[in-house]
Length: 280
Ligand SMILES: [Zn+2]
Ligand SMILES: [Zn+2]
Image 1 (tube, protein in one colour):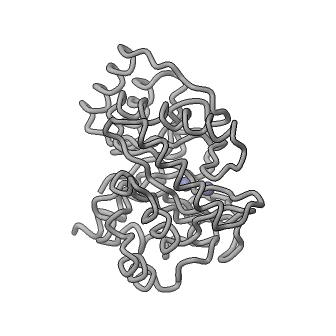
Image 2 (cartoon, helix red, strand yellow):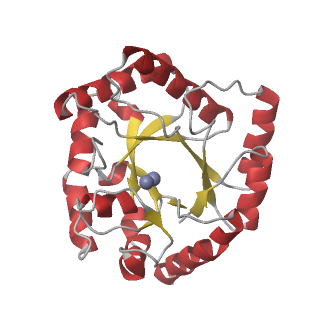
């Protein structure tokens, strides 16, 4: 199993690869561009090739995360156009870095109602995927249900995906903190939670896990990540998830609130230890 964390690429992709190796990570996540804006990024092809080669040579799997400001369900026409262009740009950057997946949060309906919000989400994704002819695919991430966020359960994510004309290019990212805060899954019984994922058909479509503890409680509907074992999910439940054979081929990516990236080393070591226990 691959384990890693979210890393900054502000010093260049090759430096990020070096950091991942230093942290003993076998996968990492990055923002393809400034996470606080939809502004397009023009990537230098040579620089991208260097970065992609460095990651490939190190055997690292990379996952990209679209900017925070992305709202697949925005009812604002101008913003919708910008969002589509931004996501096409993100997917092109993914291909340039040999990154197979672009994580994108489910939309926020911001007052237009859940059904309308879900329809806009599907339209946005279809428009993006109609315009992008490369390899990378979208991973829809489950949300904590904060504000008007859609997509708190994988049953709902499956319904959204089913409405898309491009569903074979849409898979999922499972965020442990969001799932816990949404109260969508039975965390006292991970096996039961897995059964639910299996039953709705989502399980084989989960291609990445955001592995975070939660600062706030079950059903809190707050998106507040916490360091492993320092939050409300706790080490026992997190270990059960990490050791689940269902996720054996899925990268576990930390998005825990560290001050310096060096601090990820301990959590990555813990994940390697847990995964090693199951292999033994
Ligand atoms: Zn996440
Ligand atoms: Zn989050």
